[in-house]
Image (tube, rainbow over all chains, first blue to last red; front, side):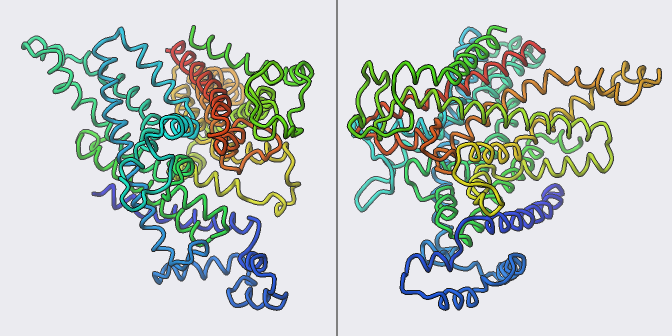
Length: 310
Length: 275
């Protein structure tokens, strides 16, 4: 609790600095809203553009516009998305939900499979090399490439699963999740397998593991009931960090599969000059990432009270 | 050390491919940039060993030229990040006090932030507004390298700081100080060799990270701009042709996989040798 209270002001300060830096970066990107309006409507005259600039405050200095935007945020005015012509919040929430469903499913699968592989490596040292190699492969595979290969194989050749997008009426939402979830899960698998293998092997060497065996516990019981809970705390931390990081890290996978999630929203809004939405999306994913890190630390201390003292 | 050797071997082969690209061009008699619309999506043949892409350009040749971009960006970004990170990490550990506090808060802040969206945001900056030329391959490479260094130094700096702290706490350093060895000599003769192994591991991993990040940005259309080939932008083009030429998507990804895995093997081997 004390940790959370100490960390929240840090998170707020980081978000404030990030928003300023991102605002300045956006000021360096090509095209402003008025020139975009000019491009889409050839009937606009130079005076119209100047009037639009004045109306939306685009003739003000960059820093002054930032302060005005920040003031709006403080009053709870999140503004509109230019790209989607909707209030920004109406675009952000569904995207966050979609991403959390995708990432949650992928991380859950990766954690279960990864721990299973790690346990295999710890229990059967002869297979450790195989698990190691698989982890190396999973870590080195670019996720966008894996996504494309899965699309080619399952959507183009076999035609079993949709290549991307969102389910229409009467289509199963699950079938649209399979390929993106598999893409992310494979990439995350490596970290769990490696951590689990190292932590379980370490736990199995401890004196209490030996005494459990001496009391007649089966090898499986020693592994799952004694070693895993002891090795599990850092794995739970990894889980929370993964979810936090993937809220934005799913960007590439979401782009490959054309899934409207936080990552794709961020990318589309940056590319489409939708600055307000891009900023809000960036701040939202940064907030989720930092809250997940905080949750990981709190959970770790709660599960392992020894850390509180340290 | 077999892992490290395998990793080095793969990297050497890729480097050879990058250097030998003009040779292959001469040998195939093809141009990696000039479109040949009669050869679009041509299957593998003697003239095009891996087939041709959406503009009829030879895929193998573009892979070789792409290796130049990927390796150049990956190596220079990782080396620069490693130099900067080592310098700042050693400085933080050696000076301590407010220097340490400021540098480590900055590192914590950068680590806490989601990296990919920030990379996208920075990569979308218009270089012309900063007074740089736009649209040339080398400026793209420089831009991506700078962005990657901006984020890449953090990991190395934390490692270097921790390693330096443990070296500075050893008895031989205290003995050297008692003997009146100057601080500069102390850092050069004792600290730098002492932290070389962890820094080397971190650098190898940074090369992998930089190659991957460059390919992601190029894939998203924010990195190396066509017609200059990079493994990432080749994949972006191949994705649009999954029906016409599914195999075109296979090769660039395989090249990225090889390069990244080689760096991982190298890092693994070095860290095992250090234990």
